[in-house]
Image (tube, rainbow, N blue to C red; front, side):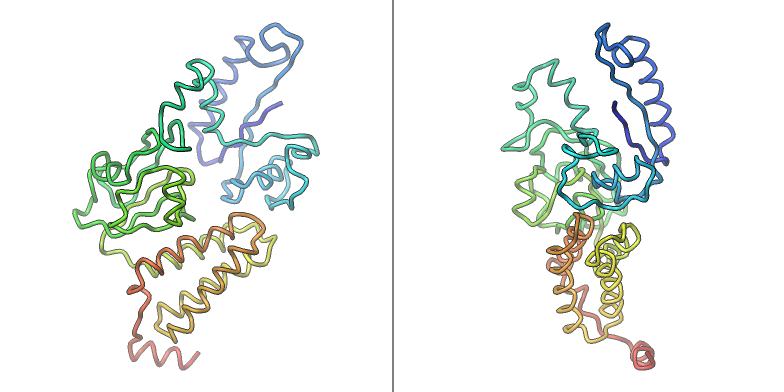
Length: 307
């Protein structure tokens, strides 16, 4: 039995998948007798409530079982004890989508796309301050600059690019000087960044990177499953620390707290939700330190003293 886990915010995708399943059943490709054999394989779509944490495989399994989506401790691994205690394979839809093409054209044909250890193609989601956003499927190895400037048309505002976040809301921020990096797992990892699901968000020179760092903590605080303390409490303390930095309160001391908190979350969180939250925070701090050097106004001084 197989399940496709889909966010409820995608009704068009839900309808499309349902039609595809019915067609596959009618053709005998899935169902009680796969291609006339004695093997059965039933496939169904299950809708989730949109929790980001369900991108983590064990949280997804909890949600499929009708429970609150919280991370499971490992071991046991899902391959040994997964959905309803049964051995379960959990893969991203991109992995499954590549299988038919590989079976049809061969492994070497697929490996001819890409570079290094990153082979095949990746759907890239281009958004933010860009003229032409959208979904682009490309082979690994294309540069970030080519994607943004040649395919995206540069910034919508017409202002210079200052920062680009790669890899989703927990991905690192890269500078305009790093746009020639190749889009593959190893090249980005060497820059302390990650490719993630291929999300790219462009920011022009009007962006405040301290506020972007705060957003990373705020996002984690909202989306955390709450099971482990480093993620649940760390994200909330991160928001509070960033608020003090943005207000200009004892900035050097609070930046030290920020770095210490980031190390704790990276090392001690149960899953990648809390473990990766410091990536956008520290990249913003390291690449754009001037945005964290705040001088409070007299009015802010009065407010901070009152607190």
